[in-house]
Length: 376
Image 1: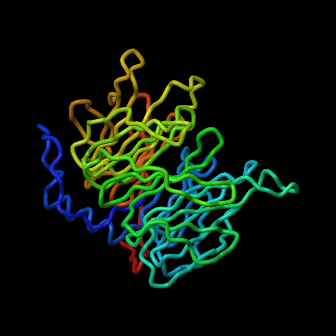
Image 2: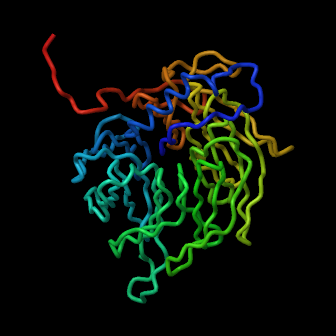
Image 3: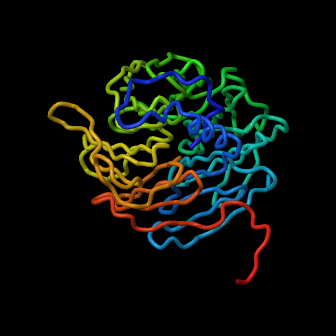
């Protein structure tokens, strides 16, 4: 998940009876600090947890919490600030990492290839990638890797095969980005800080990117985006404590579908729940927040209303929930079939059973380089 930039004057959201922390000095301090050290990232890689600490990638089994492999970036002095996974046809998974010095790396079979380094560039806040269809008859299924990155200096488009300076798409400060596909056509969604809008771009097969529209509705920075491949729903989380669902149509437009209200502080991540259900209409959404909770949302098919059916992280509350709360909130959330995975502000990874919210395991330890040790 990309860390947001230092916050501007907060816009007051709708009053909440349970908390007023969204505009508190403590929240502003936390968000500013997280932007200064944005090196906690979390994703999934095949059947493994993938997380980055400083300049290292760690592959961990979610069932045993044993480390499968650790890889250190050759851009060793620059922490990994964001990462994503992309499937290269037909079945190969590659990892793309962005670094604090503006470097961009592609990892395949756990080996790294540095494709772009621009010293002095601001830290990359988020990265997304997609393999476009290949025009070559010899390898029609492989295609070319196209990458979009966002930072405080704007949105940039990289073509991995050219290893050339990126093309600047927008100079405004951006916070998150995501490739998504509707009817085999590729698009990019970019969350912009000021104004708080989501820009939508179309991507042609020859890797040209064109802006289509902007989605408005959020009142503060967009912090995260997630796309549901079968329903074509785009979920967006924001520092305004709200989650919005947008329906992406075939005609390159999108419409607002729902607003999910349940968090008392900034929403830091949204992720469609990996239920592996056979029913495409069975949609569930995970969200994490600085209010120290992770919510599992489900849609009531009778009236189309989305409600949180499970809360984990914070003890007590309206929905109850298990212990295993991160003191300063959660910054990342993901899922493995029947397991919810959350990363706390300090870097601890928690795993809960999605059926009952029972805390299963925690992955703790040092999250920076060890500088000293002593036998007790």
